[in-house]
Length: 328
Image (tube, rainbow, N blue to C red; front, side, top):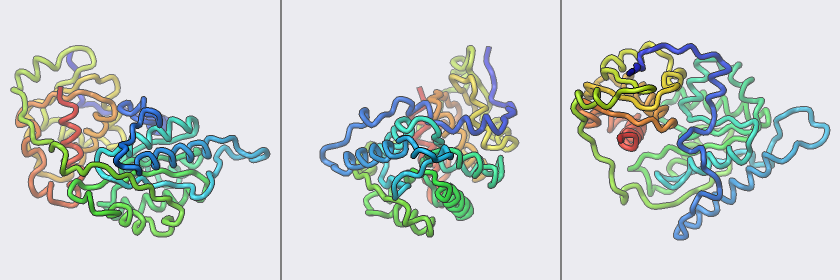
């Protein structure tokens, strides 16, 4: 029997917070499984820096300290600055795994959605009970969200929570030195002095094989292959319309129990709000390693030229890359 993603899951606050964990895609990431490139010593240095931070955070709290949260030695925050494919997320996941208990892990977008769902004060209360908050893919393309996250990080740091973040660098921006780090430090302003910038160098994305657009499968083939328990099949336009009615913080819950997704009639998106919602869904699919069968035009022109030149282009490029990785 084939299912559908066109549902409205009820997600309690406790369940929202429980979802802030290392995604399945990086569940096995450890410092030992990270293989630094000998040609780029910064990779080994980054691994050693985070391993030391993990030890400091995970160390038992001093006797007599009633709080669960223990401030790591200054600086109590690290920012992993580097290009595509150098292992930033692997190292962030390994840090979270090594620290173990009282760790929250999510992407920048997931934290902004959490604030939207719970409210700012409730989010601070919930997150400040942890030792470490990890923010993957820190984004600087939305001024409002950046200000919100800077305020949230400041509140958490004041509560003694250790922080770790990774950059989200555009492919065409790689090779520009500390482009991402400089922007990050400028935007977080008063928090900048607390962050230790850890640069991770590696092969430039422009020298890698580029991920090109992929034509979609015939819709009849998608329907034929998208069958069975835990498999969904929906018309793309219906899914896009449905996502408008579901808060993005619940997109992960849409995928509970789903092991494969089929989409027929995939076509280029013309509305940026719809495109950004789809990006969030693709991120949740990628986190869970859920294969996706794309019908219609596939990823060809999915995000138009104007979108790929605009301020959110890094999100669209990431979504295209991840869809390519999820296509069987």
